[in-house]
Image (cartoon, rainbow, N blue to C red):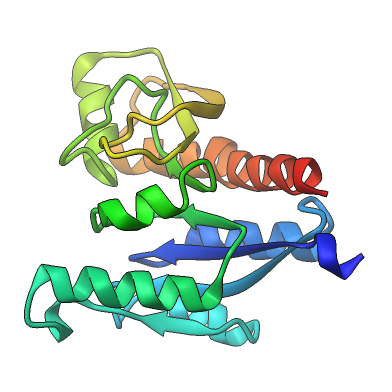
Length: 201
């Protein structure tokens, strides 16, 4: 039934590989009962916007540099999100701090994917390749990815799903990043959305 579809908005800053995993998951039936009603990026050059356009999904850029202040940017972001009216907001590599008003409005309906086993290698300034550099520096034998609910802290919300990935001898930050994406992130995020969609039904 259409009325029970989970409408999601995906927020991205970069190439959008996790967005692609979600698009593929919906198309292949691994994510049921779900449609993407919009993709929002803070970066006009994000390849994620191209991925969205290719699939006929509204691709929206709201960049901080286009606004006079951070408050104006936050207001514009909240207004656009309210217009899209999602059941679930998915942060898939969105590198801008979410406005407190948006966190409050979508509490329990906003999730983030992070490329480590939280509480390890997370928090302020810990994103992208930096996560994997820290994991290798620390010498951990197992890393992975986490999907968690978003709260006011940085990577501090309740954990929804985690998946472990072994660190291999000779790993570089780049090789580890790639394996965590392939073996954890691209599997975990579709799983989490499907789980929430079926709960929503």
